[in-house]
Length: 175
Ligand SMILES: [Fe+2]
Ligand SMILES: [Fe+2]
View 1 (tube, protein in one colour):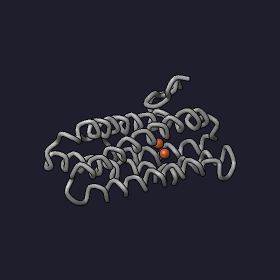
View 2 (cartoon, protein in one colour):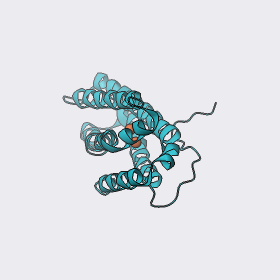
View 3 (cartoon, helix red, strand yellow):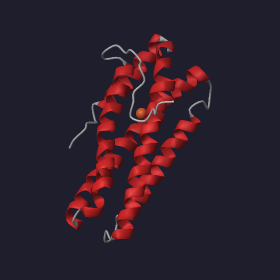
């Protein structure tokens, strides 16, 4: 099996569709995930001020971009999928969100004080665990949920489109 991480499945999606909006948000998230990976790589040699700036930027994305994306999915996308697959079908993906949120809290705590070698090693571990978990989670949504959206009735599809478009308008991939 080839590794799924970071690779979007081959789903043909029309422009401006719900499918495309989800794919666009995930593309933006993947851009940020590369920053997590890069920071984990660079952390041992960064001076304290630069390390703190880069960790701060990553935490801004996680708290201000990723977690709101997850909350929006739980509010609109997952209920739509549950409507197709049955109540509780998306519970395991909501648990992924909880695990991601806990890791963000752990990361925030790990970088509170002086960034000595021990704190940097723990920060590296958390960055890489987050990157792997989020990458796999995005892939699961794209492989398991996006192909189902065409089965929604037109009213449900239109409502989902409006909700996701409104959320997407608030998000971006700022460097
Ligand atoms: Fe998600
Ligand atoms: Fe997502």
